[in-house]
Length: 121
Image (cartoon, rainbow, N blue to C red; front, side, top):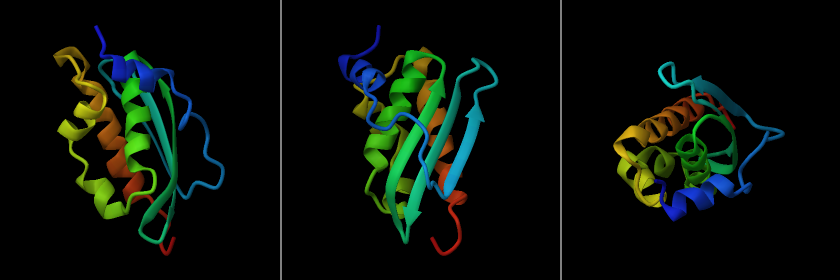
């Protein structure tokens, strides 16, 4: 059973889709369960001005990706790096042990997209 908050994020389209003009983009797949996540961001200076995701997989993976984008939009790169797995899990109202992989995938994507930002952006 998923939390009401996770289901709200899963159903939200606020950050879903392609991000035109993104200067950082990554595509990851969980080799065990097959969840796929594309995270793209527009980073200007030290701030994430826009961030979007495309996900294929379970409800937890899609909802957690949406929550991640919600939490990172408008934050500095430093603040984005400081977001913990527990904070993300709390944001979605908790995850079962079987769904923890969703938070790991989302945060791995976050780490990689922040590393890929264009120099001088």
